[in-house]
Length: 382
Image (cartoon, rainbow, N blue to C red; front, side, top):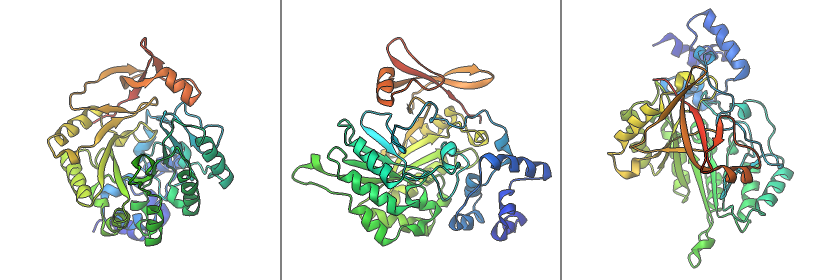
């Protein structure tokens, strides 16, 4: 057995953190990296990491993180929370709420590092009340995405927020974003799953008044779909809760069509909808995990020959909004300060962004002659 894997099974925290250091110089580099981007794993993940390289690479730091062209706030650049802490609105029909800014485990490619890894305080119950009151004054908004951090780190606060949101007349669609099903599947007890299901309120006589709750899950590799994880997923789906998976393309982990196909087939067979295949965002320290958008497109083209049930939305995300990549997409490249960029025209109007977000366009974004948003996105390297 590999000596490093033995250490991972019986390691001190220090040994685990330096798993990918080949020498003392690289240990020093990792120490510098984790001062800004700390390490955290759950007991369940620790068990999986002793077996699977695909999972170790997602949660343990690499000395390569010190070599980066990324930013601390990709997709977050230019964003400000509203005057109510934890509430954001960037789109006409939906808002984003972050009741809990921390996570039980830190993904090395997390684009919210500047929030999640900084000990930011959670929303208070009073702030939740203020946020819900504000949302009730937004008649165009019909959906709320509860994200993080991970909302399931504080289920008391999560259920309090769900109670308040579900009482609003204008909110009919609620989604919760989580990776807790991988990090700590034991969290999903029958009581919690039953409680979540209670927020699904169909109205068969007037379907426009039906209320909906779904969960966005995050699985990147077939190795993650362990029995405990799938059992937790089944507790949710058997209660009528829709699960939609978002996968991030990661170099050396799932950046080949066979791995992605196998993952998607397993998800479908376990009643989990294939939703997004995300290009890894250019967050600082993630360069070694980022393939090019073109390679992602090459993978996506191979998926397009599959059943339509297993074809996700493939997207990359400049700060101004998501860009959907189709099988016939092509890219307009530019080089800025020696960094390869994709220049793209977004689907969003600049005036809509300014009026809804109540701020100017994000950095490296501008308004086109026809009033749309144009932006730049840092490409990856294969």
